[in-house]
Amino acid sequence: MTIQPTLPDIGRDPPTTSGPRLRLRPGTRTPDRIDGAWWPHSNNLAAELPDLLATLRPRLGPIHRVTYNLTEWPTTPPRFADAGRRVRLDGYRFKPAHTLDVHGVSGDRIALFIVAPNTTPDIANATMNATTAAASPPTLGELLTSSARAPSEHTESAAAEHNWDSEGGAPLG
Image 1 (cartoon, rainbow, N blue to C red):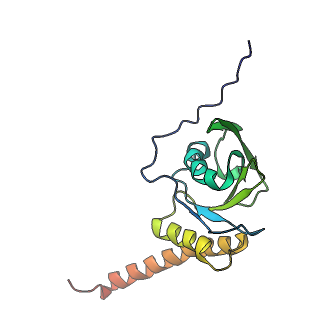
Image 2 (cartoon, rainbow, N blue to C red; image 1 turned 60 degrees about the vertical axis):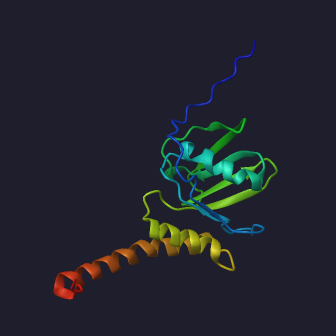
């Protein structure tokens, strides 16, 4: 009798109402470029991955590995079951921040830019659009620069509007 090791319970919450918040570039992938953007609902990677992998499976086929930045996701099991397969979750300290790669059994890979779960919807959507809508796919450096700038621009804009309102600049109703 062979004892099968049990895979960890991923503590999955009920399914989200709209599935993964994911945008992918159409067409073929370009080396050293980001293929899309993913805005997870939480920072629980194991709970978020089933919906993401189900969406990516038509492009990649069976998935065998996910690589991510170790410092960005709290405790994550080394593997979990997905579509009847074991998927390895490999965290690396030196993997670029805000990225996640999904590897298919075929050797194909999809590189995703991760939008932080607590990002406001307007900034998240702008970042996801910038990642997938450009004629030339952005590099990771370009994405990190633009996403770091967006929250500060939003904060500065909100502060200016608040000052305007507090100084009597609000329109009369």
